[in-house]
Image 1 (tube, protein in one colour):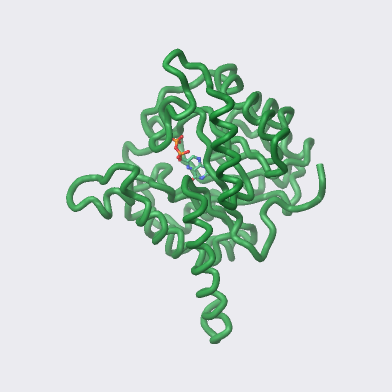
Image 2 (image 1 turned 120 degrees about the horizontal axis):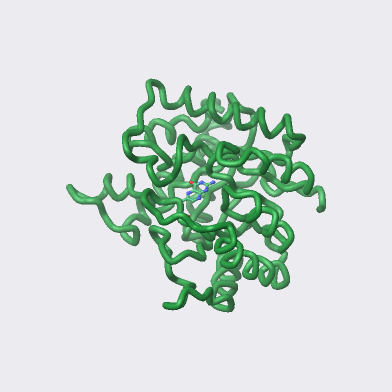
Length: 292
Ligand code: HH2
């Protein structure tokens, strides 16, 4: 693996979402035939289209983590993800990430050409992901999630969500470091929508610079089309995922303005424009002597 960082300072890294699932909340079923076969050519084409839109990283997922999603076996998750990763690795230089909590799936993805492990559980599901990342020189994204995706929205409770999420992410970071993962290969993520109420998500999104400062690592933010945004723009009902794009840009702009290093998004072109404006505003505020 080369030494170039996947999430370098000085740019907002755009992570394009490519879900190979029948049931993801926004893009589920796009590349799955009625019999459950993955439509590999169409998936690779969609990934390459995201790269043309400006994606620096493609995050390939084979299991939905939405609340109440059906669990998927490791073999099925590998069947969905590994061939598409392999084909993308042949077709493009883009960095490839696998969105999984499972060791075997992560190992198969690295074999197929991925160089980033995106673990929404922050090593709580399987701490051995840290050794795998260390051994293979992979970058590790550590998300914040209490419990399991299936039940995470049952009754999320925090006394001080920012302090608790930061402390728990710190535990994930300590585990990764203890396993030998270098800081240059670590990214943290407050887990927007993962076991949090709308108010929790808003508190976290307005505290990105605090989280980043406390942990001293790049922060990735994933708000794209999430249901709390549908709640905010839905006028009494929850707006469906396709009606949450403007809301996503607003939330992501606020995150970048505070220093978010990466955005995980469905609409890469829009995120690139949002990041350009929010970064320019951030630079203007710094030049004007405002907060960092
Ligand atoms: N959100 C989702 C999945 N993976 N990974 C990180 N690091 N951060 C996130 O916020 C995040 C993530 C959920 O979104 P999506 O992949 O669109 O849906 P689903 O889980 O239903 O496949």
